[in-house]
Length: 143
Image 1: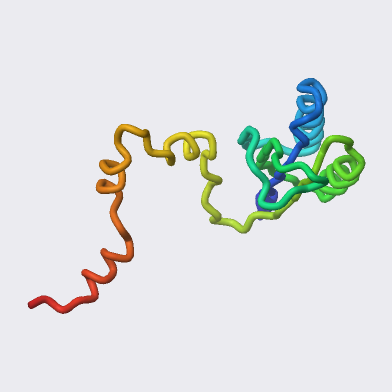
Image 2: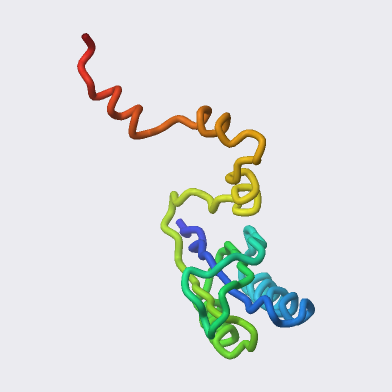
């Protein structure tokens, strides 16, 4: 019995100050390498976000997440080698996912829906259940 190919996450942080066509080429090259030797499962463009700490004095980066199957380690070696020398790429990380790991969240919709509107900040706060209060209420003995 043959085991399925392992699933990997590739996260790219691209310098948002470079031209749009250069950023698009970085993403297209990574996708092309994955599709040539593996199977691309998903590509999420998370857009420009603030970095936790500045990288090369840049406070923001353009994030991309790609999930893929890599049947051979050659794909990983080629990606690593290519991405290390790519100009305009601030950081990248390839992570092997364990079987059964849930799907990555949709960061585009989460960032838009996580912010309450100015008209209803109290209404949204009331509708969101407090997990700590629910645990305390469940732990208290009934009178």
